[in-house]
Image (cartoon, rainbow, N blue to C red; front, top):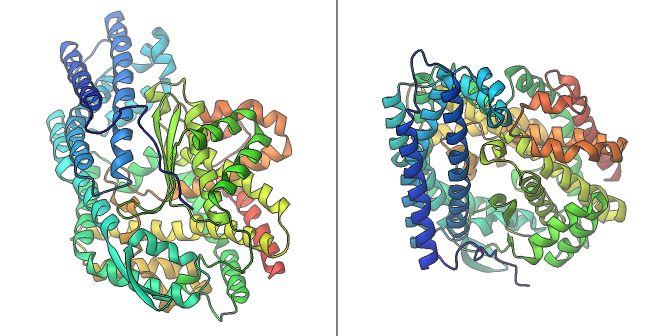
Length: 594
């Protein structure tokens, strides 16, 4: 069956079209016009600044133009990314992305100047005297904190200019190298050379010997490409350490916590509850080993299907199921999904040059584009529902400004987890026997990744940041740190001799210089989403009254404030334990079933 490719021609006909060239030129011109406005009004750090009527008037003009520029830029980035992410060999798309990143340096510098300027003003006076400031009050108050962590203007300007040839370039190197790795794997007596993204899907095959061969071949391929990837990781973490220190953060983690719109008490409460749950997840892994009739689960068994004869979820089946059960929540959610399928918002086919995994990106006016590497199994359908949850989140933020839409990772997973849970519960109700067990296991498989594996990634990244202060780490050292983190979290749930030392090379999240600790927010999202779903089940009508408003406000308040709207306290372990209890219940049912 041929899987769909997404369509972005509503933005421009093609990358080499005159319309695209004009659109690109318009965005560049808009950035330069914004720079001229900043220069005209001296938008920068000002000693002894006076927050008077003139300052209020200037703020109103600047914030309007800034939001408009961000809107146009985000659409252009998404358009180009639609080509790069599905074919990293597309030289024209790579060139256009590189060119746009160069212009984005200017905007990054302007952003720093804007923060510094706001730090010079009395933001409470601005909020009192400007409707635009009141609409952006949360962003203004955060900017006041951010301003305290700025280097000098010249240093910030230099850091922005160097980022394109520094952290951003290293991140692109990882994406380009990892997406173009070809791997030789023997299957059905024939050895074929296939893309790394395809090799990783073999972890879902029912043939255990094939899964083992695939992982061995995958590890060999990562080993062959490890040197440039280790150089990328070392360079990115070194850059983040240097800039965090220069900006007055105690650590890269403290900066990441601030960016996530939570505090350390929240992170520690959640991670404490997660550690408490490790023995329960190991029970799940041991139960899966029994179901697979093996003594102990290997790493390559984590995604193994449990039984033959379970339902095959073709793409059209997934479409129909998602539309039906999104509709049980609201017609608005169902219509969003219908448009995504019918208007080709989705790119589903795995293929050479396409990046692995799945994501959803804002395109414009509340519309999105969804990338997946679809597998005809429950997990493929569930992933689609998850990413369409992100699209729904984008839809309800449609009327917000670009700054108001800027959502921290902790809250960015809220709608996706909710939608994923919605279809999971529906699938469980319709299924019986082996199919029900398979769905339950797929859900636990995902929860195990988000709680246990994410914890291993968090521990690994902490260790890398700590040790990177002294020197670069060799490939063998990175491997050892990853194995230590996996042993500390999976414990005896997995065979220690079959772990994946190159998971640091697999995950693109480590290679984002602008977003460190791109891991714990996923756990926050899962457990926060489960907590919200429990409240939806308790009182659907009352829940619906506030849910869309909460989603549309995720860039306008911190996590604790938004959680309080539903009576949730996130700074103590109790809420997180309650969400994990939902998963513990599924583990108990799974143990009984197998």
